[in-house]
Image (cartoon, rainbow, N blue to C red; front, side):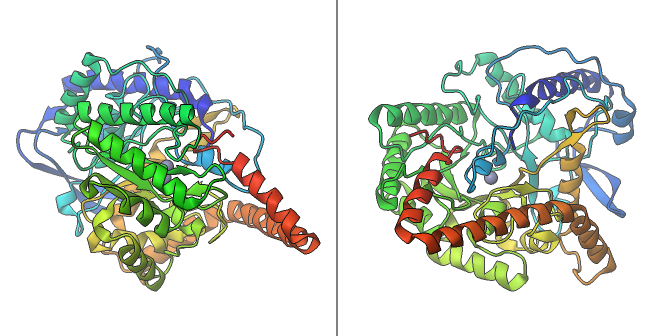
Amino acid sequence: MVRQSSRKAAQAKTTVAESRTRAEKEEVKEAAEVSATSIKVNGIEKEVVAESKVAVIKKSNISKRKAAPAELDNNDEEPAEDNDEAGDQLQGTKKPAPKKRKTAKKETDDSMPLAARTAVASLKRAMYLGAHVSGAGGIQNAIQNATDIGANAFALFLKSQRKWASPPLADETKVQFHAMLKQHAYDSRKHILPHGSYLVNLAQIDDAKATQAFDSFLDDLQRCEALGITLYNFHPGSTGGATMDSACARIAAHLNKAHKATSSVVTVLENMCGSGNVVGSRFEELRDIIALVDDKSRVGVCVDTCHAFAAGYDLRTPEAFAKTMAEFDSVVGMKYLRAFHINDSKAPFGSHRDLHANIGTGFLGLRAFHNIMNHAPLQGLPMVLETPIEEKGPDGKTVENKQIWADEIKLLESLIGMDVESAEFKEKEQELQAKGAAERQKIQEQVDKKAEKDAKKAAKGKGKAKGKRKKKDEESCDSCGESD
Ligand SMILES: [Zn+2]
Ligand SMILES: [Zn+2]
């Protein structure tokens, strides 16, 4: 999703969050010990237990509270809130003109949506759900933003994901980040999964560009270590037209160098949707990179459900899901699985297009997420939503609605142990599929048209069409920063 223009909104939100933090200081009860309350989620009364030292916030207090007027406090360094779709859309077959979205500077809804964090211990399976939240105004704000949506895990950008130069982490930011972590009881070694810059391509062939990419990558890893974060997720890269084997070797060499220059952070490769020269859409490519990494304890994999599905790994039925997980285990190894990106897909199976959809509305459907949420070996992993939350306001401007994430987290948690034959599940499944029907149809038509075009091209002249396509895909690998 192209969200450069959402920065102001994100900043506004941050300020809202900050003002709430201040207000909460007066109203929030510090729970010295584990305390419990209950909320209604999807019609089910759920126990919400605040972890030790977690601020217990009365939901009603927050929703009634009016936020302070948005004042934007800095800054150029913060990452615009984003998810993978940004570049990944461009990985598709056609490079669309950049979308210029107008994002409202202020929230239309100034009462902050909020969901209480579910105590993971109260779930039948220890699933840690969250989203890729904004760190606008300072990365410590990501923690408040995660708390606001009831996230037990979260992702963030550690610096601007679209700029090479970023100022170093300020000492004050580090102190605030650690204080917020403690206050909200997030385990930075397990449940925070920063996302790397879209510019960095560790498979870069050009020496100068490779150095620039590596320096930025290493800088991010050092930020992780300064913040006590163990997992760091990144897109493997792009071959730039060279062989896949050589690209995997270049990535692994950079990882080895980065591991030697740091002490603890685990570099987590994200699987991709498989267009053109992008590395990592096949499990075999991830395996080949890992095989060349010297310290295997410092490398892992994050499975993005949308990417996997678009790349041709099915997750929809229990059988298909089991097969995909078995394939992952036999090719890569379950011990390397460190995280999940939880996204539905607007594009059909095997389409190699990366278009994130809201949970249950896409081609994956609710059943796929039921499979994931009930798969015991995935317990304890950070599971991060990168689903769209932008909505058109009545004035036509785009606003972010973080309630969507809050609701999706609760929806996913509710799937744990749910009977798929129950009326509750079936109703929800149908409702969400209906919601996404028009969008699915639109993308399906695009995919069909493209297939038709390709078939015609192939019929005309095989060699010519192939050569042309390769070039096009190379150019369109935007999310990896491949510009040559
Ligand atoms: Zn990603
Ligand atoms: Zn992702």
